[in-house]
Structures are given as C-alpha cells and as structure tokens.
Length: 144
Picture 1 (cartoon, helix red, strand yellow):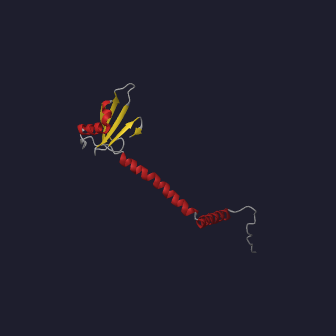
Picture 2: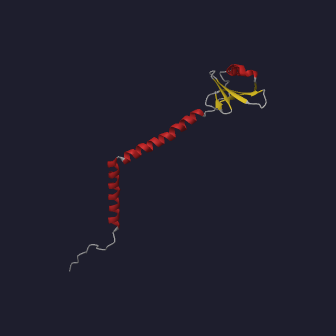
Picture 3: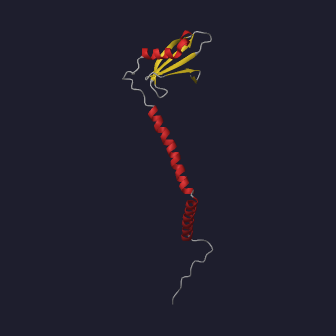
C-alpha cells in the first residue's frame, strides 16, 4: 500500500514562500532603483555629506592648535605696539592703550591691544597685530 503525500494546499503562505517572495521583492526594488539612477545618486549624496562633515572638522582641528608658550613670538611686544599705533594713526589722540595680550583666537598668532577712548562715554577698539605685521581694527563687532 503506497500513500502519496499531498501538497500543502492551505490558503495561508508558508515560511519558504514568504522568504522567497521577500527576496524577490528586494532584488526587484534594487534593480528598479538602479535603473532610475536613484541608488548611485544616493551614494554620491552620502559621500558628499560625509566629506562635508570631515573637511570642516580637520580644518577646525588645524586652527585650534594651541600656541606653544615655551617659545617667544617672532614679533616682540614693542614692535607689535608700534604696528597697532601706526594702524590707529591720528586716532591715538583720542585713544590710549589699556591692555595687551598674546592671542591665537582668530587662527593667527598675534598681539591683541585694547585701546579705550578718552571721551565720555568711553568706547573701546581692539587692534589685532599678527606676527607678520598685518593689522585689523575691531570696533563694537565690526572690522575695519
């Protein structure tokens, strides 16, 4: 007597059928994305965003290297003061120096001089003199 196995005719899907269907849908959807050019575009966008995060991080790390205080700056304090007074010009008649400090805040090493006005109400100007002799004057957040 032989018994013949009958195939599974239940209306519910089997585990094997569900897995093979999911794999087929996944492969088809990837082919569809590649045929539209969406997947390569997504990869380019991902690499672009990644590089936009890495490059500023490296640049910021390069700018924020602290100054080695064991070595004197190449521009002495009196020479830096002479550059600062020269940058102010005739305004030195109305401003006097109240402080000087070595600064690396703006990414360039230099001397930062604070000048305060003799008039009332008093105003302050900051003169940044880099070690190569370039000067910038700051007044209330503006650059001249």
